[in-house]
Amino acid sequence: MRKASSNWLGKIIMATVMGVLIISFGVWGIADIFKGFGQSTLARVGRTEISAEQFRQLYTEKLQQIGRQFGRPLTMDQARAFGLDRQLLQQTIAEAALDEEARRLGLGQSDAETMRMIFSDPNFKGVGGAFDPARFQAMIRQFGFTEQRYVADQRRVSLRRQIAGTISAGVEPSKVLIDALSRFQNETRSIEYVKLDAAQAGTIDPPSPETLAAYFDDHKTQFRAPEYRKLSFVVITPDEIGKWTEVSDDDAKKIFEQRRDKFGTPEQREVSQIVFPNAEEAAAARGRLTSGTSFEDIAKERGLNASDVDLGMIAKSAIIDPAIADAAFSLPSGEISQPVQGRFGVALVKIGKIEPGVQPSYESVAAALKKEIATERSRTRVGELRDKMEDERGGGAGVIEAAQKLGLTAVTIDAVDRSGRLPNGQLATNIPRGLDVVSQAFNSDVGVDNDPIQFNGGYVWYDVLGITPSRERNLDEVKDQVEAKWREDQIASRLRTKATEMVQKLDQGGKLADEAAAVGSKVETAVGFRRDASLPGVPAAAVTAAFRTAKDAVGQAAGAGTNEWVVFRVTDISVPPVDLASDDMKKLKETLQRGLTDEQVAQYVTKLETDIGTSINQSVFSQVTGANNN
Image 1 (cartoon, one colour):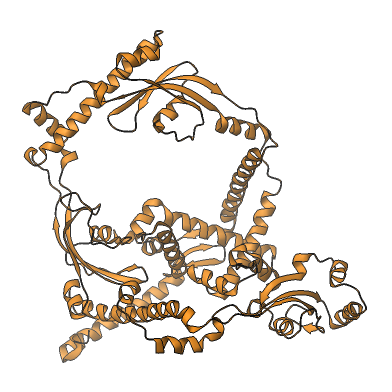
Image 2: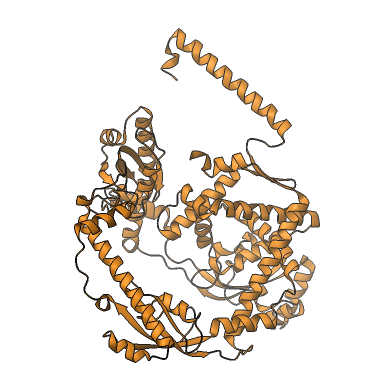
């Protein structure tokens, strides 16, 4: 744009273009009023609008969360293939519907109750079992929350649970359902079986040229050469940059001095508190305490249990109320404070055991501190290189050219298929583990300026340099593969025929041991297994088939490989009695109850969405989830 407007003709053209854009923005704005759906609105549930940016953030966070679980990034194409876009949309709409219902019912929750729920969450408790602020901050940051957003989110979640709990109260699975499912799950079977493999298929002579050619003609698609792509990419991540980032002792010591109080273990105290509605009641209670009444007795009189009073061994920073924290850490052990005006009332604070803090030496934390500094510097360097790389790309430079200008190393792969394999069938070894650059390249094209891939806290830029289309191979190229596949098919066909013959003889009164001896095999047994069993040496198909076969009846199933078949007889079926008092039955009942509860709540939410009105802007949804890119 700068180049285009550098002369009088360019200025006239750019002025015309910008004028058209301004008029377009105006038209879009006016259209929003009449259409009732803003360009930024993805869905409306009652009076609640779900914006495109709001859903985009939720969707991105969900993909990143799943990517971390799988150890590799999840693309939007893959997410849509799994239906994650629709699932998240349904979840978001359901949550909005419950929030609308909570407002209609006038439900609310105090700040104190919300904080109590967060403090009691086991995910945020440290080694000592108390709430750990540092752990809390680290975990919510990992999932993209600020503290304010997380607290607000938890308040909404709590209100949704109140509604869901009311709807599902009293839902309980029937005894008939528990009994039927228990019998299904716990039924056991025993079988005797014979495995047939290549040895029982007999001698298979090599195919004639005519036979092989005919087989190849019938199965050409199995032997096609896949599409290959030539691509180049450059990786810029903190880990890569950190390898050549050095940190001196002087730099590390400066940071150590600045953060000395954050290293080591802070002083911890055993703190108990009782909160009163006003200063008069607190003063009266303190008078009774000095006269011999115990702290525990005062708590019991006020209907408080131990968890309401005892904060445990806790650091000053972990006490959310500053006034209570100051009082608790100014008293000696065994003392009770004067009435303290706190955030949630007037409190009396009692101090038990005191554990002094431990301050480590620089030497004991130097290695970890240097690594942290190097990582932080690497993140800054990643940002700088990202901007420079984008500038080079914006100027028309390819990945290889841009990498050379910035002193980076670009990787080039001459040919790779969709599965990440080279023409020799081996996996490409120069692609970092977890980097899904191949599928991205197959969704792009030669000459396309691709967006960078976010990877391990950094970025990956890639170019598609060439495409070798998929093609049919001739027989001479894949003769060995064709002959091997023909042989496998011959073995499989003979084994199926032999297994069918054995089943027919057994149905006519033959013995499995005699049939096994006739084919040079042996009889094996599997005893007392359930439907979900994974038995050594017994293929899953045989386990499934056994539960479709009556006692003393015979069946057959495919083996673990293409050159294996199994013939079996069911020798025993056992259904244990149902003990409703057993631990297994209690767990089963809990599982069924959760399922019935989920179904009940889902039906309620569906009715709620219909009653309050739900609409979805499909075009915005497609844009946010990347469906418009295909």
